[in-house]
Image (cartoon, rainbow, N blue to C red):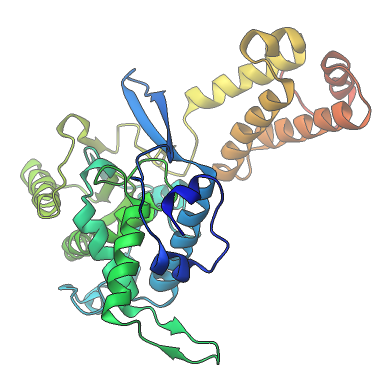
Length: 369
């Protein structure tokens, strides 16, 4: 299959056969990604490169190969890791909590709950710092340890030439302009693979000092008991020096040292004593619920063109609060109210105003006055 054909349709053949026979008649940066511009809170631009649907399908299949090889077969750095993970007390193991199955920002925050000291660090230009060579090394490691499935059910290793072709084409399909595109489904997991040895080194360093370590994408968090200013500086310096070995660097302006008397927020969650959502966010959601039920369409149309999209977005935010604070009766009631509201809208064809009014009349549902 020629790469230009991928613009029209995803491959029908099995992934490895597609990779082994793929021909490049046009470059992959020619119309295979849509560029989106998002703005951060500081109003700086963030460029997202979203792959077209046919390429995204192939990248998802590549991601499945990575999951199988690393999460199940445990082949990453099997032979060349310099850190003996058996020497680390399992009770201290934290590691990577992003782009992995069953991991989330909540799990990441949980590791740093109720600590006297939290050090927050940020990796500068995370995806853009991963080079094509580093991605190539990941794929070569994967395909060198992934067996070929034969028709009779047996397995055999790929030949050196096949490993080369699989590696080169996997690499090309997962990179854009010699780095990882932010927006491709493979990028986060590949970046984790590139930093696997870094994570092990920092984890080993922290465990010897009775510190907890986690990394959620580009957010590094280290926590523990009180430390002197000198000890804190040594911890930050160690992380910075380890990152340099892999051609990454810390974002100096985003270094934060939080003591117990500070509000400690890790990946968007307050962790001082228990996990909780910041008050500012809950206050804003409380206000949204109030305006929704008081002004109905007039409120929604001020900010959104589509009622259902607005309700879905609001429900998602409320569910997020409940995920963090599972017994928050106020937001559990908001969720029930929105569920009842949606039911009235969809099943009884009420207007939003009538659906809001009927929902408020239900004595079992609590909506802020």
